[in-house]
Every structure is written in structure tokens, then in C-alpha cells.
Length: 362
Image (cartoon, rainbow, N blue to C red; front, side, top):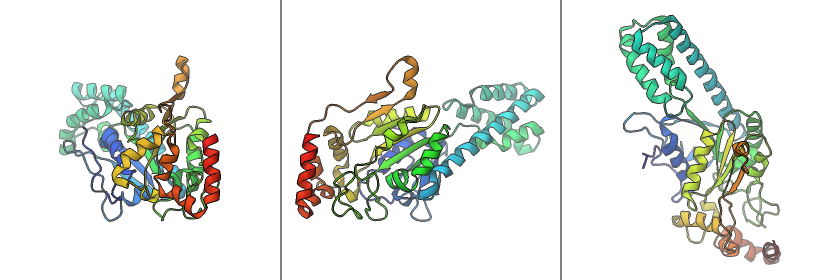
């Protein structure tokens, strides 16, 4: 029931991406900083001189949003994380200096010490920071703050620990920006990546990407994609210490929320890959049933739900958790409900028969 800090987007009706962005704002919106890759999410996220992200009614806080290109958004987001980390270290040094100088009185000294102890606590850093600001504001307004506290006041926007995310689609994450994601993840920094996988280049008109599954008809794959979908999650699991999850909100909302929260809590790189139905899927039941489409994708085994948490190894537990239930075997029914697959049976019937035969023996 948290207030969504995403409203009035320019997305297609029934878009499968916006619910994930909305959830991100409900979980972390008041301290959220987003590096958004060019693509559908940057277009519905800023298609004119306004953005659909808004502020919390009570506090006036909301997401800080920035956009970079397909090819360098991961580097852009990584730079934001590294710069924020360095700036907050500078703030902590200023607080330490103020404590050593014993300026501001007992109340201010107590607030400084409390914030320094909890500066990296995502829940406590914000209220403690607000308490400190309230104590410093009269002196700041009167311009009577000692030099040590002037620096703390100048950097007050850093008192709350931010929740920093990179966000984009499968074209960015699997193709054009994959090198950047690979580089950012391999560095081992505490980064969070949300990938909304529509399995096609949605924004530019439905071209095939490496996330496009075998047999799917798309631009540049008019006779059906002839290679398997790239297993991005599996690739990223090969690195040490990377949290990876696969979600479909309409199939299991609780698992999706848990995965995003675990990713944010993970000290190191985390990647959450989300199934996002799109108008380019040409689903016969329409996008008004987008949630049911997600549910059907998971139930038939088309889209697995899982969480890979390397921290579970420390307690002797397996890091991989499969959250999907046993597949119901209705994958052909699911595929035929989408024209991107059923179209192949009309245009290349022999190829379609071969793929169906291979699917049944898989």
C-alpha cells in the first residue's frame, strides 16, 4: 500500500515494464536514484519535457532519474554509484571532524554520533539525518554554524543512504550494453540492475535481440529466430558474489518483491531479470490480460522463477532456489497464443513442425 512514485507514463496500455518500475518506487522511491538505459523505459519515462516519476506526499522526496545511451548506461550507473560512495565518505569525514571539534552542543554531538554509527543503514540513516538537519537549520539560517558543521550542512542531501539502480531492457542488457554490464558486475561493486525483458527491441519496432527465443518471429528474424535465447542469468552466476533473480510479477508477486528486496540488501552486484509482456508479442488475448500472460509463461515452464544468492553458501545452503512449481506441460498452448510464434506455422510450416517436434522431445 506504499504510494507509487510513478504515474501517468507514456507506455502502451498493458505494458509489462511499468509495473516493475512502479514497484521499485514503492519499495525505495524516497531514496531511489535510477540510471535508465535508452529504450522503451526511457521513452515512457521521459517522452517530453516531463517525467512520470513524482514525490512522496508527506516528505516531498522522490526518485532521482537520469538517462544514458544503450551502449554506456552500465558505465554511467557505475559512475553514479562510485561517485555517491566517495561523496558519502567525504560527508562521514566531515561528521568525524565535527565530533572531534566538539562543536554544536550536546544535542548536535549526539545526533552526529548516531548518524555516523547508522550512516549505511537504509532504514535509520534517513530519520537520523532529518533529525540532524533540524538541529542544524537554525544555525544555517542565521549563518552562525561553525566551519565543521557548515560542511555537514552543505552535504546534507547525502545523509540518507540512497538506493541506486540501473534499469533497462533486453536490447541494452543482452546486446548493445552487455559489455558494460559485464564490466560493472565483474568489478564487484555494490550495484543493482533491473532488466525488463520483453524479448525483443520494443522501442525501435520489434527487432530481434539475443533475448529473443528460438522460433520467435521478429524483424531481422522473419523466418523465426534460429538460435536459443541468451541465458543472461546463467552467465552472470559464473561470477563470484553476484545475486541473480528471475521474476514475473503476474505469476508470483511475493517472489518478485522478495527478489528485489534481497537484491537491494545484497552487498555486491545484483541483477533482477523480469519477464515483461509487450505489444510486440502480439498476444491474441491482448495486453489487458498481461498479468495472466505472465502467469501462463511461468506455469508452462516458458519463464522460470528463481533466486541465486551466493550468501547462502556461508550457512551451508544451496545458493540456487527454484521458485517455479512443476511445469503443467501447456507450453505449446502458451506459444500459440502469441502471434510471434504462431506466425511461423503459417509462413514456414515445415520449420515450425521441426521446432514443435524438438520441443516435445526436450
